[in-house]
Image 1 (spheres, rainbow, N blue to C red):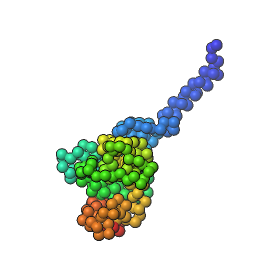
Image 2 (spheres, one colour):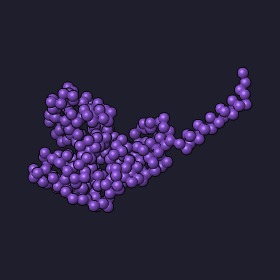
Image 3 (cartoon, one colour):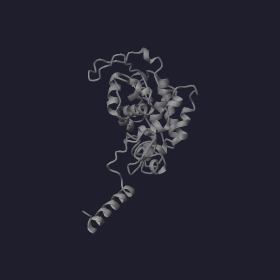
Image 4 (tube, helix red, strand yellow):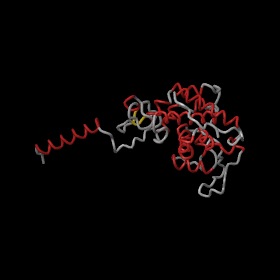
Length: 274
């Protein structure tokens, strides 16, 4: 049976409305699970150009400006120049030179909207603190894995919910040198990889590596930021470096933090040591 004029007009109107929504409105039905290296735009579409990675970018290697929250704001603070200046201080033969990239970091940061949130100064101080510890832990992005880590036993059987897998090694890997089975297990569950069965993934996938670092940061460090940089050192390696145990290592972290605060044009604040 042929369509009536009213039916034709209705179909045309619905089609036009759908087309307008696809152009002007956010794609709520699309979760924007973009492949690595692609940005999720403010309207929920994947791409690599400015309309996707610029203003309103939700995740991925965003470049748009922002007040500090979200990967758009992070991308405007962590510039190519800032990131690459850290790498430039390590040897060209380091494994981390080709592994750690700004794009991988921004991709991972897109999964943590609370990172570098708040005011512009607060965001800059958190980024300076994060990269100060990353610089110290990796030797300016030189190391992907802990030196001689494979010879260490980092399996704590008291954490029965995170049982160690046969043959797996849970030594330090990634930007904040993730260590111990309970950290690998929890990080894997949170970020979507088999942390207990395949801990080596952290040293093979740079986005996963940065996600585990940001997971650890948001779980253990982010909350102590109001107490000053010294509290972040205590949260990461306090048992080894704080309370006069290794002041040289602690002060090295402080030095990186102060340097990055200067670069970002923000006051470092007080309580720098632990």
